Length: 223
Image (cartoon, rainbow, N blue to C red):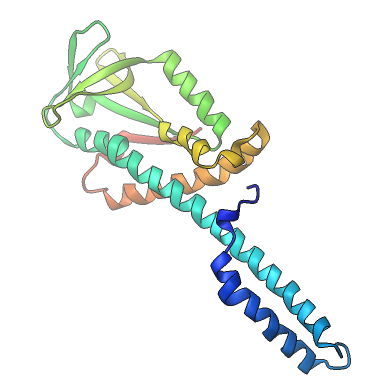
């Protein structure tokens, strides 16, 4: 990530790092007065050590921001898409789907499977999303508990419906971290770590809501 002032621990520098420089300086001079006869030399070393501490704070702040952003997006995606499908497939009630030609097909939960592509990088997300959009159709789920139908991408093979999903919300990360996605090389490098936070949060939510969703029908694959 490129340097950004919002991740510098200004408050920590004021209340912790800068005062610590003087403490380090006094300690260093007291421990080795022959090596550091001047208090200014000792303070200089203290400032250097404090700068290292500030850099550590900065790196931790960046990591925490990336992780929290990925986890927030993962939670929203799970609740609105993956978890929603999982709960739908948990029911024994037949599910109605509106096809592109406006006809209605009905499938029971055991006739439906879901493939969810979890990308490792931005390039993988782009590739998988293009593949899904090219090889599947948009169907609308007619589900009584929702006032408006929601759409999915799927294929019908004989009497079986295969739903294809992927976290479209990951495309929005570049808007929040635009300095990390300035070119293809940095996008690949930074997205790999951020997407790993996303996947770990999804795995955690799957366990947390395992009693409410049909986990066996949700096939998560790394792409």
